[in-house]
Structures are given as structure tokens and as C-alpha cells.
Length: 261
Image (cartoon, rainbow, N blue to C red):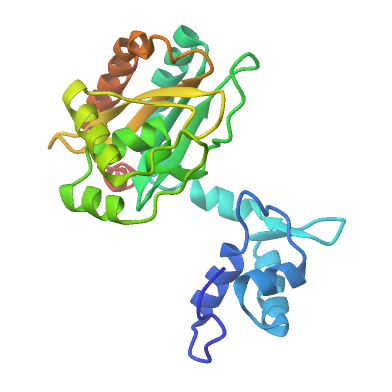
């Protein structure tokens, strides 16, 4: 819920963002009253802004009277470098990786204390997961998240270890010292793993997509229900995919340059 949005000094932009921020994966469809409550805006203000957003196709009103994110925001979202350049370059290699492992394949980037999932490739035989493209999960409880955190700047790691570490399952590592040791081990061996730390019954293995300066541009991971016995068997295929994505990104002009070419 947007904080401070009832302030008389709140700008129109902040109020619009508060309305849009009322929607999330758990609340994809909201009534007008729901939007007002979750955004912290007066009902009259919410009614006016929602009407304008529907006119501009940023929101859509269903036959049941609830509102959802509209097609215009989807069109704009496709212009994001994350969804555009990174996803466009990585998707063929993610699909190739899936044909090899036949398990869920994820592409994620670090956004604050969370792993932001840019793409997911799956099939009907893959283990069900709670991840989705555009979704966020904790860094410390996911394979891609651990890989991204392990290669984050030292100050980012230190801040994360000081913060609250949510326990998602009984197996989630929430002790700062233990997590710090695991991150060091990830950097030493070059890959991350989880065992039922985000969801019971599923395990994951992940590696980072390296940038030219050694920083992690993204992470690629595999999630399944039978990876725990020998997760390292997937590492060569993961590294091959990550290195191919990194090489392609290095050859690609920045998105802004491509747009003006």
C-alpha cells in the first residue's frame, strides 16, 4: 500500500502510481473500494483517477465491475530494457536449456532485496512453482536470488544480512552467519543451489550471467523436484547458457542506441 498518499501535497503522478501499485500478483482484480483502500487515497480521488486510467487503457474494467491492469501498460512494459533487450537475447538460450533439462528455467535480475523474474520457460511435466515472469521472490530463498546476492557488491550483501530474512519454509536459511558462509561458497564454486527453501518439494540450481566488469547482469536457474541428489550435473548446461547470453549482450548495442539506429 502506498505510504503517505493521503498527504495534501501528494502529486498527481504519485497518486496515479499509488492506484497502479494497488495491484499485485495476489490482487490482479480490484473493486474501486479495494483500490482506494490499498492505495490510501480518498474514494472520490480514486474514482476520478481510475476513470481517466480506463480511458487511457492503463486499466480495464471487467463485466463484474472489477478493474485490472490494462493493455496500454503491457505495451509500455515491452519497451523496458529488461523485458526487451535482456529477455530478447536470453529467450532462445532459455528455451534450448529447457529442452535439455525438461524442468522450469528462470531468468532473473536483482531489484533491491528481491529477485525480479524476467522470463520463465516451463512445460506441462515440470514441477509447479510460484514464480512467474514479472514476479518477485526473496533473494535468500531462491536459487537465482542466492546467485545474484553472492555476486552483489559487498555493501549490498552486508545490508541484506542485517535485514529481516523471511522464513518461507522450515528449510529457509534465515541465520545471517550461515547465509554469509553459503554466499562465500557460491562465489567459490560458481553456482548456487536451494533445497526446499522457497517451496516444499522443489530444489533449484542457478548461475549468474557475467557482465564485462565481472558484475552479475542476471541469473539463470533451473527448478525441479529431483535436483537435490546431484544438482551439479546441471551446472555445465547452465553455464553454457549464461555465457552465451553474456556474449550476445556484449555484442548488442544498448537499447537506446538500437531505438535510434
